[in-house]
Image (tube, rainbow, N blue to C red):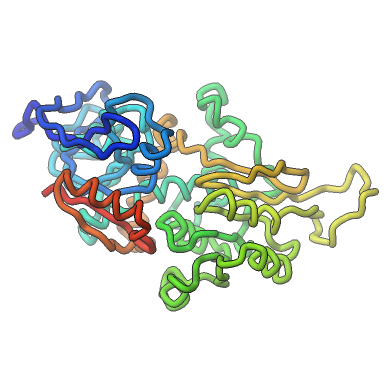
Length: 396
């Protein structure tokens, strides 16, 4: 570990609803397990959670707190089991394990489990590498687990639902077991040709979800503010959906979806919040027969099979209760950092997707420098200035 100092600079949150404070002389995080690596942080990707959590008082397990969920940088120390990496490798670190402050991005040196590290191909810059990790993990799990999309035909990707069902139930975190194992039936899995609605097409998560869905053969409806993003998305070579709907009037969105798709529409991903998720629930909530015939009357025989709809909320779900035709899903993000077989499959798949140019990384629309740039970038996000792309902070 030559050239690594004993202390570092960090950005720490000392109290809720305060800016991050720059602290010098903080200890370098220590590798504790054989499957961990140490990475020098060079570019930080900013995410909405980094300002929403301190502003609204959630997702902060301890104070002072070090935040930050994704970065790119250079490997400076490896361990015996991290044979995929060597010192000097350029990598992406995806830190979904927000309770382990050694893994947080807002510091000069970061520890990560090797199965949460992705090699950056020569064709990709460190800045671009810092834009994609969290969105990729969240949307791959949303599509692959909650909707049952099989990615095995896409750059030798994983069938995540099959992979998780082969994991011992007791080894899964208790709070995500039902989502992983019980919330979608084999007969309900999304298949090539099915439609999926993505609400919030200007967000990084929505853009990655669209790309992954299209690669797997799904057809995509994007709901977005057309006044801001309509022209860009409708003419974009990669992000252009099969149907683009203006989000201005949620009731009108529901009407358009019901009129155009009816029983064909069973899958939706919301990236915006509870209001838009509620609109999607209205569009999806109906009885589905296995043969896609019209909804059955109240006297439906008990043996009639109902193919349910599935709604995934990245930032919230409707208050309205579900019924027998609709299932609400939250993304089991813990799979990535607590189940090594899943984390490694996703990380290796992202390496192949980036190396083979299957995925287009988000546009970088704001760049700030140094640790003081973290607060500047997050203030831009608070003011709504970061839309349709990503904000990053460079440390070198």
